[in-house]
Image 1 (tube, helix red, strand yellow):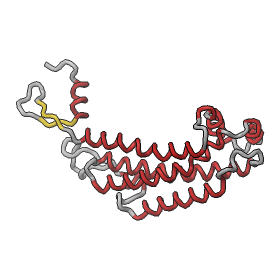
Image 2 (image 1 turned 60 degrees about the vertical axis):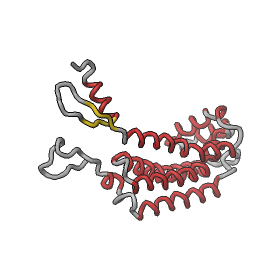
Image 3 (image 1 turned 135 degrees about the vertical axis):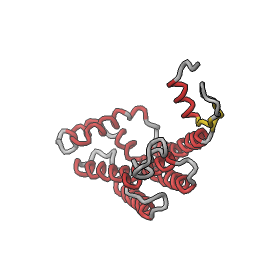
Image 4 (image 1 turned 120 degrees about the horizontal axis):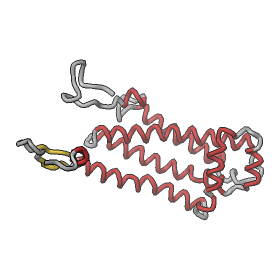
Length: 220
């Protein structure tokens, strides 16, 4: 968290998250963001080429499954960092058009990647239980046991085909985008409000108004 200056108080200038220090980017137009997006896309393409159609096989080895999960984890880590950073940038200032453009850009790539990765958990959920249990029994997958077992448990609730899961994965980021549009709209709403005992009328956001009502349930 950063402040306005050495002598600035919370009343004079509210704290602002130093997102650059947290995520390592200098701003929404940092060239490293584009490189990370490209890296995630490249890794995703290789991941699909290497593993699509092979995770359900009873010939799947423990070494291959372990490598697949680690690759999958690496891609999601890159993507998650970008998604959280883009979301946080907009949260700091919902009117920042550069932050909004970054979020739209990340959402687009996230949608593409999610669709291409959807095969993995679907195939794992449909894999032969006995075979996967044999692989787990080797002890080499212990770090990912929870993920594997939960994915297997989800099998009966998955869509019937891999293609259907890929289509759903494509839609999810777009559905989330509509929520963000509503949140941004709400954040810009202000309400004239005269606090009890004051003559001046203040313009409060919905969040500020809710906070006041919560702190003063029975204002006189």
